[in-house]
Length: 75
Image 1 (cartoon, rainbow, N blue to C red):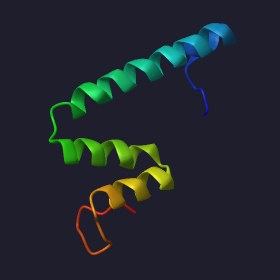
Image 2 (image 1 turned 135 degrees about the horizontal axis):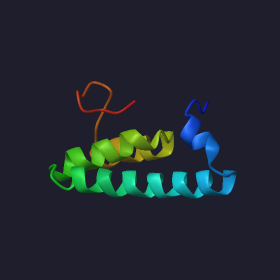
Image 3 (image 1 turned 120 degrees about the horizontal axis):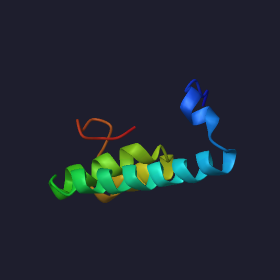
Image 4 (image 1 turned 180 degrees about the vertical axis):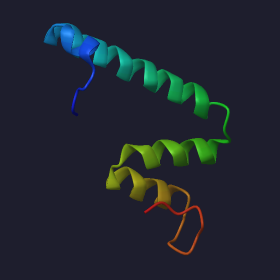
């Protein structure tokens, strides 16, 4: 990722790295809070889709017995 922010670039690499880890953690917490409001199927679908992992996506489709013809099928 290109860093174009002078403030961020003014920080040490250690501090940048730790801050990015904190941001990642906060985003994951925010994501789980958001999907907690969804029905289980849709929460699972969002989670599986965001993993970008074909194994997880395949497992999701299999768990819910989805085929490519189903509108909720993840590919």
